[in-house]
Image 1: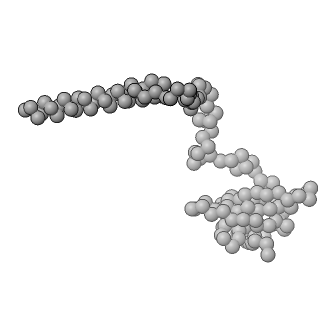
Image 2: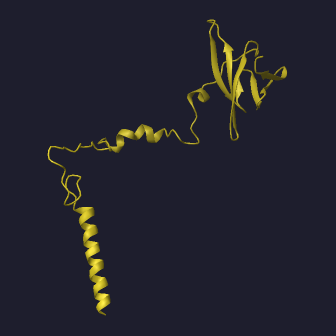
Image 3: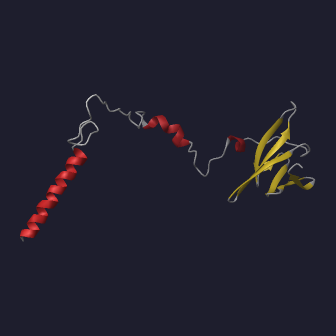
Length: 151
């Protein structure tokens, strides 16, 4: 019985010590510890902003990480293209089941424009049938055509 009372008193003292350490801090210092004279501790600004939650309504409405989100390019129809002449395959992107191709098109101003087409999308008068590491297979009115990397 005496041993039980001694253990209970030890647990109580331990609990008081923990409480003193956790909640007994003053200005960022542990209880009983003071900085050396002349040394000032830096104060840190709050990490959380003071803006109300309504300030982030646009971010909540247009969640960047939503699986249903589509870019603005997907919403705009592509302009009709008569042929793939002059277009060059610049790169292939394969992440899991998502496959896309980076294609360079000649522009009227003499500069080239670049676009990303995904497997299953329409590109001008063509349907992107397949994207592989060798090239892009397109289905058009003239039949299937393959756009390969330039030599």
